[in-house]
Structure formats: structure tokens, C-alpha cells
Length: 256
Image (tube, rainbow, N blue to C red):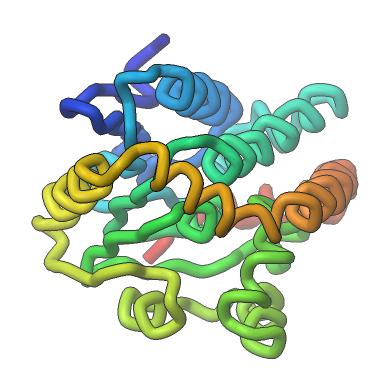
């Protein structure tokens, strides 16, 4: 595995998966998604691992799709479909695996990066955490099961507004809405997430896995259907010439 894009390490019984493109705010590319799937699978399959911490290197967690990377948006249809399916597989691995997932975030969590927060069991957010869903403005479509998860967590009206308008969300709002477990100083995010994960590891493993399975069970069938709908809508969006024009126009811009 090339560690330029993603880092994987063991901290005792905790696996730490780190998005490692800090110069691009850990923006998503097909290669990064492939490595992310591989890393989560490795953690889920390792009996010595009992919790997963998911974080990003540098000042931000993940700035969403890398609009400067053309390997997804301008690729042949078959490659686009594979990219979207792999992106959705990240959600399945996070939400349907045996491990409790603790997201450690700060700075930007945008698009797919913000959706991954909703896929985690626990979120330790730095005070600088902020995010939004840019998909509608780009002619794209949200993924990560967010079309099911977001309305259930924040309510139908707020979900419609957030997904349609791209309204920006702060760390305090994530805490108020029950997405973030805690908000801490940016410099304390990873250490606090590791301590939190270790507190879970200290509990009876079989009971933790049974509890998470029971809590996730009501989502399984509906989430799978949401993922399939999102996948089709996202692939359709990639094939739309209007989307290509919007992405090309947005690519030179930087998140401010």
C-alpha cells in the first residue's frame, strides 16, 4: 500500500487510519478511496484490533472530491461507476463492520468527508471543524447513505436545506444535532479520540459488538437501498455534460 495517500498504524488494540493528502486538505480521489477501503478491511479482519480511529493529516479532515483530479469525473463510464461504488463501500465498511469507529476531525469536512462523520459511531470534533454539502451546486449527488441518515439525525426540513443550499455547519452545530460526541481544542482531537477508543477497548468486546450490531440493525436494509439510489444518481450526474462544466468552473477555486 502506498502510504503517500493514506497511513495505517496500530496503537495497541486501536487501528488508526489517516487520510494523508494534507496539501490538498485530504481531498478524495479514486486512489485514496481504494486505499481507504483496503485499510478498513484490514482493520476489520484483524482480531487484535478492537476499535478504529479515522482521521486526516494536517489542518483538515477531508475537503470532499478533489476537483483538480480528473481521474473520476472525466473517466470512462465504467471507471466512474467503480469509483462511486468504492466510495459507497467505505460507508458499508464503516457502518456494517464489527469495529466501533471514532472519527477525529478538525478543519474542513466537506461532501464525502462530511458524510463520513455521519457513518462513524463517535465523532471527536475540533473547535475549527466546519463543513457543507456542495454536491447540488456542482451538479453532483450526495453519497454515504446521507439521504437516509441526515433526515433521521437532524430532521427532514433541516436535511433538505443543508443538502440543497450547501449551508455551512460548525462544530457547535454538529454537537447540538448529536453528530459530534465532543468538541475539543484542535490540538487535542487525536489524543482525545485515542483515549475515547481505549475506553471502548476496555469494555467486554462481545458486548460492544453486540450493542453496535443492535443499534445499526434498523438501518441495514434501508441504508443499502439508499446507497444503491445514491450510486445510480451520482453516476447519472457524472455523465451529465452540465456537471462537467460546473466542475471545470469550480476547480480553480480553493475552499476559503
